[in-house]
Image (cartoon, rainbow, N blue to C red; front, side, top):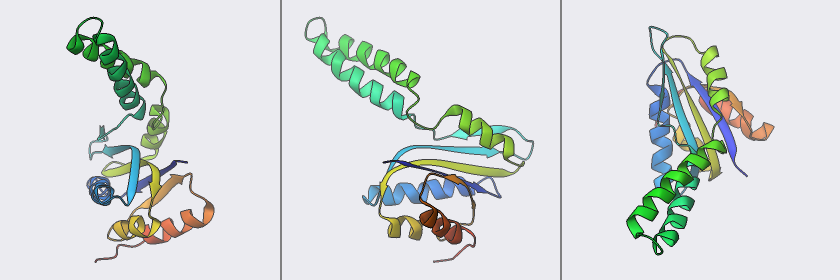
Length: 164
């Protein structure tokens, strides 16, 4: 089962740094991210959404690409692959399997200028490694789907910056 975690930060750069730290441990096989988004509200109050991965589009594009390749044997392999991937991505985006755009808008509305937020959907993780990766950062847990004990532990880790 996937868990969603939303963390807010009191500056514009911290969410990106935390996302990079999570990417590093993902490459090591300690965490599996299903979706992510970074929202920055700059000093002028303008919102910027970065690094958004839409699982529905990815799943649709891969499935559509495969179907297109199969159909391509009947027509042309490259044309079938491209048409299938594009159609699959379009269909996949309509399923909204990742982070809801409405939920991102709700969090944006609560952000002050000069802040950032990180949204992650985690499929699976080594809790020890994930928490260790978060220790150097300070943020506030906005919302999670973790069980209450794990959420409280995450809140404690993010409540203070620990240099490693």
